[in-house]
Amino acid sequence: MLIITALAASILSVLYVMLSLNIVSIRRAEKISIGDEGNAQLSRAIRAQGNLVEYAPIALILMACLEVNGSPRLMLAPLALAFVAGRLLHPIGIKKPDEMGMRVLGMQLTLVSILALAALNVLWLLWLLFT
Image 1 (spheres, rainbow, N blue to C red):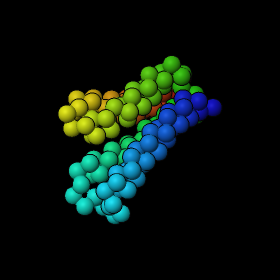
Image 2: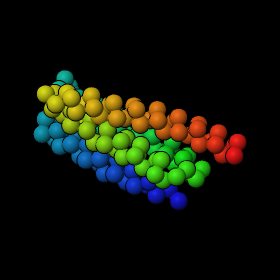
Image 3: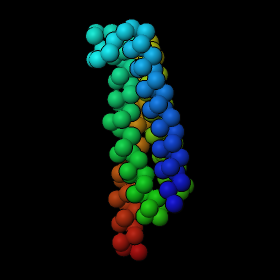
């Protein structure tokens, strides 16, 4: 069962919808149909959503691989939590330029958790192959 992956995917899906609705709201308020027309607020909103779309799939695939291959949930849960936290913090830093620390922390959590998930997959597969 992909319990941790499903939970992470569900939270990230809600975040994706929220970021999408933010874009729609700005587009309606500013009457911008296509692109961002140089509107900084809309540009930041588009990038916040795009950034999630760029990073979430690989993390979710790595999480699912670990779960499908039977890794202990206690190994996976902290990394899934770190990834989701990073994805929640990042758009806050993009939306508010004075919150740059949130954006940086969000990216740090995102990238470290992806690298750790990849490493853990390799180590877990080696464990399975040689035990």
